[in-house]
Image (cartoon, rainbow, N blue to C red; front, side, top):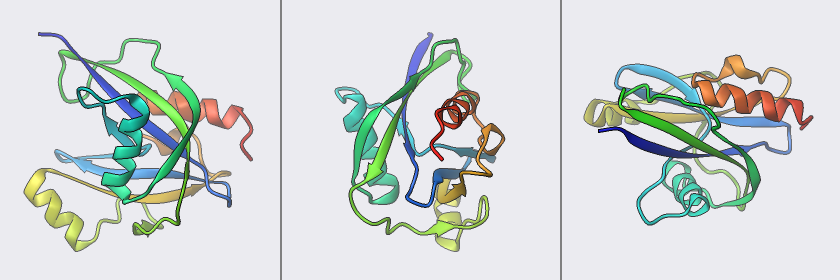
Length: 156
């Protein structure tokens, strides 16, 4: 049975002109993406994004505006019979970021590796300087399009 998988992501650019990314290990694959995740039944996209930031980073965010919604067919990397629809919003933190931030990609600590051993998934976060940020930083095809959109909007 074919299904839609709706994902909602937040683009957070801090005062130092750095872009927040999530480095994840999922089922043995290393993926760098924007923070966010799956829409749950009965949930709106903005509520989903606020929930995801709370779950992943214990961070309250304000959703500022819509940036992009997938406008082409994208199959899921994990389920060939699922179509991915991703929705991206600009967000800003409503409080200081307390979650640990890394300097290097995939720099998981012992607790994160334990989570991976138990669940097959773990994540950590880091900022990428605006001058170094481009589509090559990200792993997912739709994220790469969004990287080009935000870079061309001259956030610097």
